[in-house]
Length: 445
Image (cartoon, rainbow, N blue to C red; front, side, top):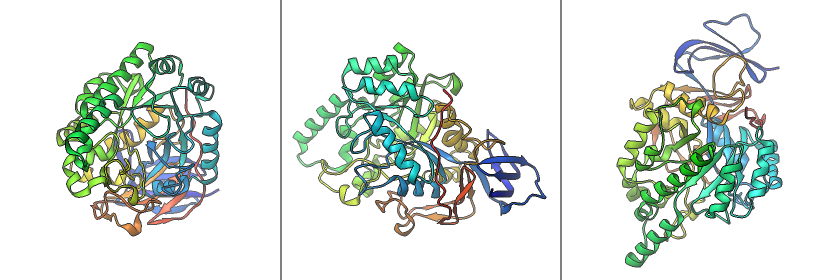
């Protein structure tokens, strides 16, 4: 059984930073103490570095099955662990979409054979598969949740039938995660703008998928959740107006309605379409700067509960004009923690808050067993960050199968030096060094 002793490192955990030693034995953290000695273990010198719980990304698109020209569970989980993300929850809009329990389990089987990170998969919802969706109640400890696209998506994943929505909100015993944009408003905006302009451009995207479309759909989801006391988690909040729907007056464990913000909505604004064009086209759209400032405020005051990526890789050839051709989505999972460390260096967010929003709160929100914290007895999902080294995002060090990043050319003022998944050192100083596979996440429901 492999043991690791991380010496003299600054441990970031539960709103505290303290210097100490951490002993990893097998899959778990055996001991945390000011000093640990006389153990037969490989020592890692942590002096001057920080140890954080591995990030848990509750929204990624790893494209397998059916879209593996863009990404696979193996390639994107490799990128994830290189960036300090040790667990992920993946969305159902693959080909075929995960709209049956059998198709869902096929994705778990693929991950069990190929994923370097821990994994879970959302059950997909359509207008006509409510019976199948509600079978997820039987596996509520083994499936992270049910995903509802209350806005356009691929295939038949758009759910706009009120009776289907109402029944699933009423009867689901697992968390419901929603993509909230009002499809009828989006279509009307598109038709109006297309008629007036003809050829559309990247900066039109937040006009078509505007703030009203987001608010209207999020409001509808919140009303359904309140009606049935549903456990609702609204993904990728992108507007100032939606923030009125959420509260910081309750501790997270008492909230029935929670919200996620994604790193690209915290980093980019509509001003960036001029230089990045369709590379930053995503749904919901990156919007005007006042929204970004409001999102940061809500993240720091706990109206927004978790940080994720909505990692959505496409080939660069799929991100080209015209507007209707350019696919929506950004590859981000390798650089999300580094991007938050960039904002830490700018004085925008503390290390303790990063650990809370990317690890602790995600584990608490989904009731994930024994992960998300640096605690004795917990799984050793850990990341070591060096805030004295820099990382420049270049084509040659991007691990996404699609081979590009909207952050290319950006120098981030930190580096990820080590990542542990279930006690295995899977990434060290630029190299994937252990092919040990991740585990299926379990949930305390």
